[in-house]
Picture 1 (cartoon, one colour):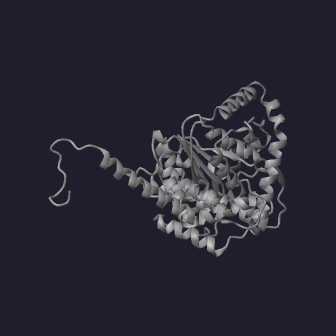
Picture 2 (cartoon, helix red, strand yellow):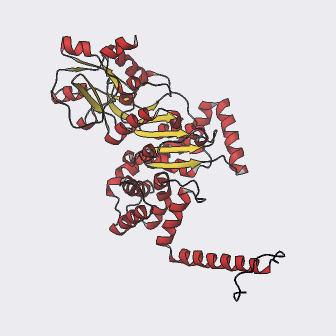
Picture 3 (cartoon, rainbow, N blue to C red):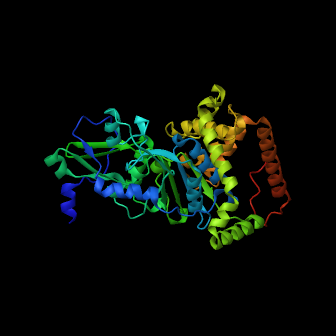
Length: 424
């Protein structure tokens, strides 16, 4: 059965290397995909714990919100202990994203007006002058299961139909469903590295290209990539870590008040989810409006050349490979300013997000007692706060003096070497 499928369907997707050549009509396996697409629109809404009720974990929440404002940041990697609201936060932020217009019955969540966000079939109809029927759809959250195959993720081409009927019969995968939405991989550190690479390639290029026997189909796959996992169960390769825009570490809440409130809210949600959500719907709606306003304001936000030089200087001093780190810090700082309703990035704004943007890009030294995030924060302070440098030097001097005093005060053991003659 496996070999039969391999003969008919393409396994895998290639990185986008330019627009595919002209070819026969494209049909997105309507019988298999259209019911599922309409089902998404008509299915009963799943009740999700509200984002505004998540206690603590401020770095995680900020990273998710900034990616909601600007999807070009490159997604978020959330690593931490079990039971720290990682999955809850991801599903909750999806509820904050605005309802969008899509082409009715389209498996790629195509925009009815923007050709850049259209799948192949909708784009053909649009170019033919047809007015595409629109429908409303909540921003999709597609969860990628650990057991998913490359076919399931990327989609497949029916070679038999392509050769006999001249039709590019394509069955869309999870990347098509996630277009213009969120793709979430829980336990991403346990997923096969090859599959993670495929997904991150599509997330970076915004296009998923499937190729088989000289036949190529490309469709938009622009989504926010979010991964989460427990570092005790395994780490991601550095090459894959670098592909995530931001990375945050979450820990179990130790603040008694916040911990208690989170438990009480969760119990109340499980007892009456609809009533609990209704009680904080006004806060949720306000946050959604804030995200939408930030998206509109984002193109107007400016960052000075001096700050851009500072960002690149920090990346250079930290030996960050490539330019992804520089770009992500610039984008995240602008998204933060837009989210807070301002139009100019300050030094403090850069300081708030630079650790989350760079900590996962540093080379790890198992013998170094200082973690990557602390290194980023210390270097930023050294370059931007002269008083911090003075305090650091003074603290170092006092520590050395204390060590010398302790060494001089401690009595030497009998027969201990006291140094060379004439130096005592």
